[in-house]
Image 1 (cartoon, rainbow, N blue to C red):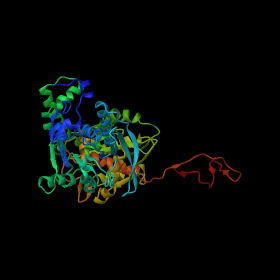
Image 2 (cartoon, helix red, strand yellow):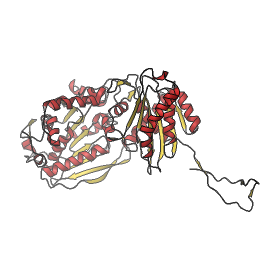
Image 3 (cartoon, helix red, strand yellow):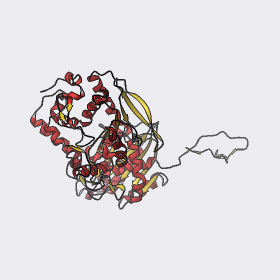
Length: 528
């Protein structure tokens, strides 16, 4: 049965006891798809859901949480504590709870912001709370509180595989089970040796009590996910279009599809940057300029090639550079490759606050050395208030890195050797900038996101492994855009000196030479 949009917003639901009974789903409204019904219908002290991305499981969880918090003690009511991976998903969850509370006609309070003091790390964590007439409440937290012990209710750990210390968090959460609470763990996978996958394996092996739930993307589609997309968009469902839509989704995730859509954890240390985080920090409309030349192009006379690439710069780069805010400070990072992999240039702008964003990206494939230098210099010469850059100086990249340092100053261009130590020092800060929004507006481009997803934990250090990924046309990539972005962030944190000069009036002790040159021993410049 298809539901009209208004039926979704105002479902007539039975009380909690009528919806869930002894682990079976009863009278669950058709606003839930089959897999959402099955998840809500699992009543167990510990339930763990491994899932595909973007199938609405947290949305269904929010409905269940509202029913629990709004119920009386006799009907099984409890407090609910939600722990999200970051603030963005926490806000999204509490807003879904507020929507469900209105849909169920519960006289719940408005969303209130508050502070939770985490004693173990001595920090204050922002919270969002909805209080119900039952006396129970939903508390959504933006970070991991270790002092859940001593509290009572349902704990929801969302995107659990991406929490910094899931093992310790589970210890605190499971203490609530002693007095009849519940722990709901939901996540996509993030590697085979991630604590989330280890938890699932323990339950499967019978080493730990708990109920498991699993839903792949194709299983969700079979249960009506695409039909629900059509309903929301107001378009008619078509089987051929559904198949094309599914294929497009798999094409978008590319090499990450098994882990993100099919619930198959990747081998190794798992991806370092979650797709949830990258989606929050990316935006459609940020251009990615791509220049690729065919094999053998380098035999054309250099003046003709330089004229060719200059024309490309004036057609493609110049209009974007002309739109950049004049008052911004600018930086860049460049990962270099001559053939096989890509050269990628990531310019970075910093305006009034400390936040930084790339206005566009440049990708160069099979572009000869001299033309890469020409394109880089064309770009940097036109960046507003250029401050610093960082070049990949390994192998053939060393020549271009040195040329850039000679042109713009060795104190402003860092020639970076991408060693394990460099990654160890710089990747945590890069990830932190993404998490708190200091770095934002990355291109919502499939290949760029795949490059950022290519960072893996190798011997305890986040870096790009030797394996390569394939872009849509079949050409290989090696995390090139991700490396360039980290280099750009590194450049934006370099300590540089820039001097400004201003004219001064001569004093009685000052004099002019016969050629009207002013002489003074005073330092009129200063470090900014």
